[in-house]
Length: 116
Image (cartoon, rainbow, N blue to C red; front, side):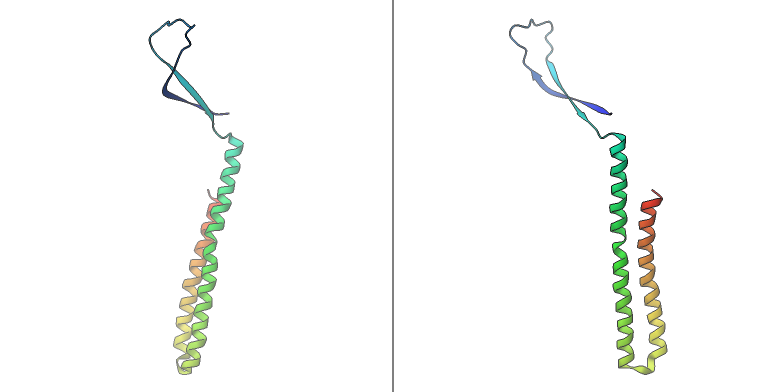
């Protein structure tokens, strides 16, 4: 178990019956306990889970982005069917970029869980 000491600057008054052996004041000493190793390990594990969960929130944004890209593709087809090939190439590019952001979020979550 770890402990640390903290010395305060407030002098404690001596009782009247105690003789004054020295003229220096007596300082109060306070001790506090820090967390033991077992609790540190579980706290570290919990913080890893929280961090990984926060990192995977970006995957939901990736899903919303992919839905927006393909929704815009359908809307573009409906407006101008002759641009089908050009719109599809832009759609695949948007899908790849959005999916890459989701995979980067997932990769960060796995790195937080298993590499740290």
